[in-house]
Amino acid sequence: MHPIIKISLRLVVLFIGLLLLTRLMGWFDLGDIKYWFELLQHQPAESLIALVIALLLADLLFSIPTVWVALFAGYFLGFHVGFTAVFAGLSVAAILAYELSRYWGLQLLSKLGLSGDEQSKVQDDFLHYGSLMLLLSRSAPMLPEITYCLAGAANMPRLKFLLFFSLGHIPYALLTTYAGSRSNLEAPYPALIAILVLYTLLWGAAYRLKRHHVTVR
Image (cartoon, rainbow, N blue to C red; front, side, top):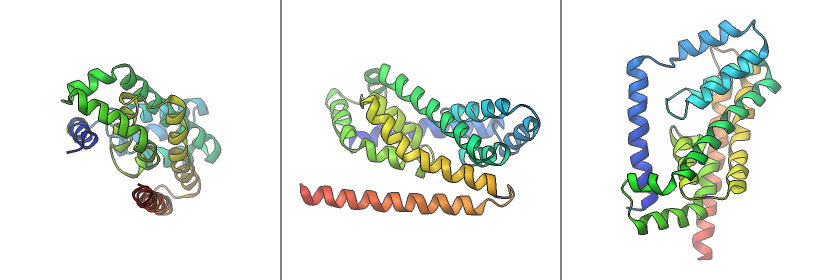
């Protein structure tokens, strides 16, 4: 088994455990999140912006429906402010995970059971394919958190991390907040369809890039 797959599966087990804990304790329920937005909707916009950023930061450890957070942000804050808040929250969470994993990179890889050779392979291969993982990270649950951790542990250059993070997350934030600003919260189907179309295109592009890479080799 490839070391990146091995470490990803072990991180998935960790995040699933946190997900089950969140569900059992009733934390960050969708109803609670909607209630918090409604509670703060008549307060200064800064209160809602802080709520959005806090929820997206908490998503690093607890499974929070980030699509709904972004939709609520667009609905309650409007498109422009909502987009700024959502992208800021996603960025803070990603940079925090990246920097912590970069600082404890070797210890993290060792604790996840990788040998010295496997750690070197993770670092080398992630530098080649990590940019694609960042582009696609919002297309599946838990993939963003895993990708941020791998990027830091593999010592991906910061500028490269920020570039591909932005390329993958700006469209996500734009689509969800715009749809939230235009949609009925009870039926946000246009936003969900738009996200599905976006990441279908990204997966198609990834497949073509992989085929091109194999052909060149």
